[in-house]
Amino acid sequence: MKRLAVIGLDCFTPQWALEEWLDEMPNLRAIVEQGVGARLHSTVPPITVPAWTSMLTSKDPGMLGVYGFRNRASYEYDSLKVANASAITARTVWNYLSRNRLKSLVVGIPQTYPPKPLNGIMVSGFMTPGKEVSFTYPDGVKGVLDQAAGGEYIIDVKDFRTDDKDALLDSVKEMTAARFRAFRALLRVDDFDFAMMVEMGPDRLQHGFWRYCDPSHRLFEKGNPYENVLHDYYVSIDEEIGRTVEAAGEGASFMVVSDHGAKAMDGAICINEWLQQEGYLKLKERPADRTGLTPDMIDWEKTKAWGEGGYYGRLFLNLAGREPQGIIPPGAYESVRGELISALEALGDEDGKPIGTRVFKPEDVYREINNIAPDMIVYFGDLDWRSAGSVGVGSIHLRENDTGPDDANHLPDGVFAWDGGGAGQLRRADRYQIYDVAPTILGFFGLDVPEDMIGESII
Image (cartoon, rainbow, N blue to C red):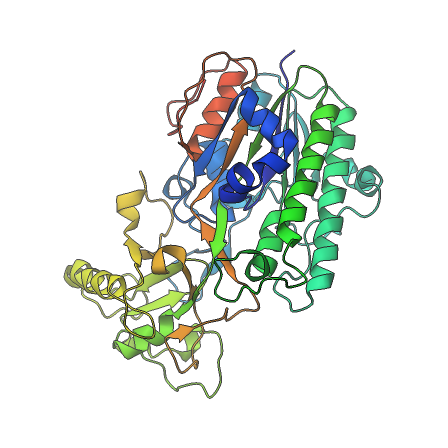
């Protein structure tokens, strides 16, 4: 019987896992040496939601109709909604496996709450609102999770943007160890054909500790007490990989993947401050202090565009006939968007030096546009800077995060490592696409790859 176990590590970054620290990670290195190890190019934007779903459906965000954690449910100004599993209609790999009577164990994968039926077991991911809700399928699995975890099963750490670094470190270590223990315990209870878990720890720890560990970060201080936190955590992850390979049993194939990586963040561009300065956004009153932008603060009759913060920026145009108080004539849509793109890509740092911002039109990067996409997706400084949505800042540039301590942004490349599963000759590349993972999993089980999957199996 063919078996495949997949360890997903959110934000596990290739420059460390596959390069600088690989020799100190013998279990991951063994997988790479037996099969392949390469960068895995993520979605636009490279962010947890929708990247994991894109990986496991082989569909881009436009095809999924999900462009980030929060998406416009309508063209009303206050319609941003969290996109959980209910927003996904595309079939995942475990849907195809279930239809072919293959059994799956799915633990902690983002955008799986609320859980949907499958042939096997599902434990929903970090978007689960709390352990008081039904977040497993079957529901009875919920009652044994703490026992399986050897303590408390932790859905996610409560606050990774904190100055209490010792508490953050302890909570991430506890969460990671418990998730791996629970996954291994569940793995042993049945003969699963496919088993996959995702651990959020790398993401949480890197956003909290990057400045202390990366010598390229502008705030790095050699010899600081947290200098080896990320290195030691990666080594501990490798030890968990080794234990999980053993638990998967002899003959099981093993894969390690991540949805994107991480890199140093130089600062933040206050997108709504910039839009005000350039005359695209008008507030009814200027806030006395820094605050988040809300629709009621905006003078819509004098506003052409507004933006949202995050690791990437999203801009929306106030289009007549589309938005309730739109003022941009439909015939001027492309000219206004072109003006904004040119100005954003020329945007400099505090000294006016261009930072290399990239702006994407959804129709240029997605095969389809479903639901409501942003009018523009912005990588400030090619993701060396994040987007800050706050107003009342008094500056376009911030050298800090406006939503709490955070010194890392997302790298568009994640990690792909697979022992090959005895498949023989593999398609080798320095960089695979995130969309290649689902076809590869189906190919491993000898199943046909659906025509609407946009990736290519490496088998």
